[in-house]
Length: 361
Image 1 (cartoon, helix red, strand yellow):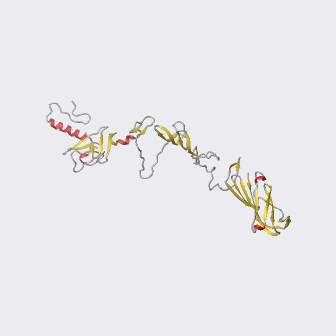
Image 2 (cartoon, rainbow, N blue to C red):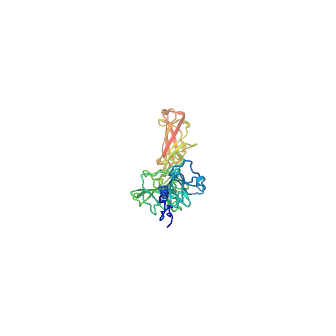
Image 3 (cartoon, helix red, strand yellow):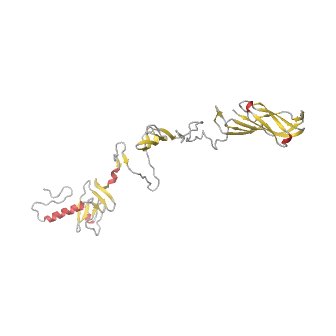
C-alpha cells in the first residue's frame, strides 16, 4: 500500500502503525492547505517575519530563507512550521495580493482570463453559434476609452464582401450601414428585410453622395430629397451666365451684363430686360400736325432677344421735364428698335432713355 495519496499527497494510515494521530493530523493539515486555495501571493520570494497560521504563499523560482529549495511550490504556515506542497496542473487559487483568480499550468500560475484568446465562441446571457460567434443579450453594451479615444472596427476580407451594421426589429432587418458589397460607405433601408433601397452612399474616392435620398436630376423636386449642388441654386451659382436646354435651365438664375449699347438682365425663365444708355441732344423741332417730333434714331439692344419681335415691348422715358416730351418705341428686329420723341412745342437738347422687355429664348 502506498504511503500517501497520489494527488494531494495525504499520508495514509498504515497497518499496525503507532501514533496514528500524527499521520492523521498531517493529512488534515495538507487538506486544510489546498481546500478553497487562497494565496498571499503567486511569486513570493522570502517568508514573512510573523506569518499567520493558515497563510499560504505561492513561491517564485528562487525563494530564500526557510523557503530555499522550494521554488514554485506552495508554502503553508501551520503555526509552528512551513509545510510545502507541489501544485498540479488545473489547481486554481485566488491571489489575495493580486486580487485575481489564476490556474497552475505549464509550471506557473497563469491568469484564467488570459486564456479567453482564440475562443471559438462566446455568449453573454445568450447562446452563441457558428454564425454569431459572439452573442450578447443585454439592454445596453458599453465600449469605453482607456485614457483617450475609442474605435470600433468592422473588417472584411475583400471589396466584394460586407462589413456593416444591421438594425433589426423582431429579427427583421430594416436598416443597414457600412461597406455592403463594395468599399463605398452606404445606408440601406427596407420595409420587410427582403427589399432594400440604397438610401445614401458616399464614393470612397471622392466623397460624392448618391442614393435615393439625393436629387436624381435637374428637374427632380421629390419632397424630402437632398438637393445636389450642381442641380440646386445657392450663392455660388445664383448669378452667372444663364442657359437652357428644352426649356429647362442649365445655367445660373440671373445674368447681368453691359456694353456700349446699355445694360441687360436675363432670368432663367427666359425673361430679358434691356436698358439703353442716355440718348442726349434730342431736338424736337419738326412740326407734325399739332405736335413736334424728333428725327428717328436707332437703338441696338445690348443683348439679342429671342422668340420673335412680337414678344418684345418697350418704352421711352424722359430724363427731365417729362411733361414737355415723350417717345415712340418701334421694334424692328430682335436686336434693334427705332425711337422717335414727340412734344407739344418745339424744344431742343432733350435726353431720353429706352427700355425693352421680352424673352431671350
